[in-house]
Length: 224
Ligand SMILES: *Cc1c(COP(=O)(O)O)cnc(C)c1O
Image 1 (cartoon, protein in one colour):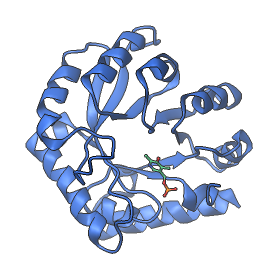
Image 2: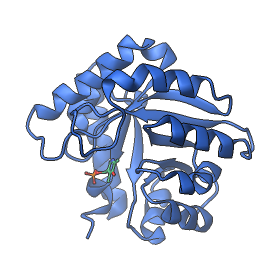
Image 3: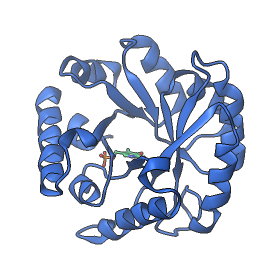
Image 4: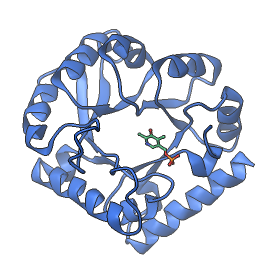
């Protein structure tokens, strides 16, 4: 069941990439497994999935201990600085860095990693919603500079979560905006990763340049 859903999502990604004139393997699928049991992840793993995204530090720690070592863990949730040490230890990439304080704490914790480098993305609040996480567009340059100054962090790109309830073609303008911001801050050479697009809008995100899509529901089913 999960294997079939995974194949269907992969097919959606491949079709969207082809339509956009991009290579299907230019888009990484992050299987978002928050709240799902390790057995569901094991099923996805058996079907070939190796990149998983988690939102909660404790779940990340528990699942990474229970599942095969060649899984690439991405932390995609909001992260409190007091949990940074657990996340820095097991994650390949942290997607939602949105403050200098969090970056500095991750940087301090990342030095205990085997290669002493943690990959990070900056979450940008493209919708401009006050209630949401993500750095405001005007604060992006200074956060980029902060992260670039921390030797144990490697800034790889930008990430966004469009405002809740945006549908139809609306997500497109937020995805496009994230790409424009990337292009204005060093382009694809400096910031190769654009993490945007989820179950409902992954095609639009890929058309607008997403290199990572974070998909939960379409693979693991609805969350309770
Ligand atoms: C839960 C979550 C997703 C996955 O959303 P779906 O709609 O279930 O695909 C993607 N990104 C983030 C940051 C999430 O928290």
